[in-house]
Length: 379
Ligand SMILES: *Cc1c(COP(=O)(O)O)cnc(C)c1O
Image (tube, rainbow, N blue to C red; front, side, top):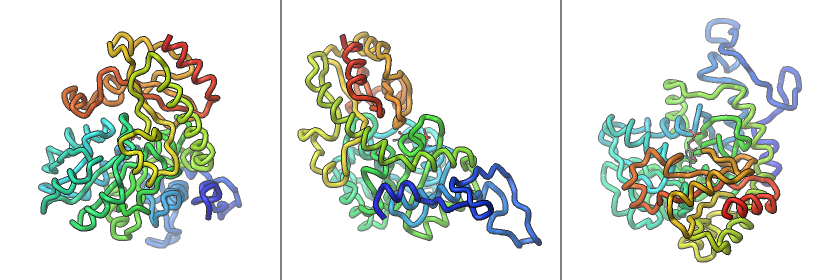
């Protein structure tokens, strides 16, 4: 099945009881059983819910995987993956990734004895060098938030396979429309469905996709035992979002390309971070593993004072100053004080994330209006 057809039909069968074409919101906590242990496959809604099941089937299909699992948020999905591990196990993670992932690893799981090593994963030799006998998981994000660095998923998967280590890829920024890590050898794909999958800034949710039945069993056990499950209404919203993922992504990419090139020519703008520039250091890898380059980009001003950055951040009218990304409306964000404030300043600076970096989530509005808005704010 081709992409558009898949996104529209993934996971959704007409409801067996009524024929409803849209999956109903099964707002129930429990299911009546005919006799003890005799049921229709649904016992208690933390373990199973028909709306969630439809979405989990859709999750599997859109990432070309066998299985999907839905969680109450992206970080809850990440949390479930780390709970596969035991004290003393080691994780190699990217040094440039979503601040909340770093916070979960360093502030929650370190104290349970999981050991995290952070490396620059854009050079896969760093990962190879960091693998030890205790390494159980490699965690990468590509493109990264907010610096748009690219890691070669296929090359990391080869290292993971050779060392019998799991590879999990946070595919939030690319979305399944642009990149499918399972096809490139990853064991688990993680999404903050809050972003492009939901697509309308109205839901918090996370997803895991995988091919291994054994891994699915372990992660399902964690999902029902720890209970970070999304409600049926939220599952309905993400199912609905997925139906237009391809249409939205086409426009996100189109607008992203126009604005990246426009910013680069603007006299007040310094470095622009967008993985579709041919002189981006990892352009060849981005070309190889992504179908297009998406709608996320960051930039610095030539005047690198905090005052100048703050002025731009508070002067846009269409671009709303807010955390999050991937919705239909454009957002502007200041990573150092907003999305990435949970990463210590010295670590941020060491990774190249300056205090004055501005991040844009380019929405699906008309590019001309977005450019006018940025032009006014820069003036
Ligand atoms: C937002 C985000 C997360 C966390 O997801 P939530 O749904 O906010 O819990 C993880 N990774 C990336 C890349 C994100 O942008």
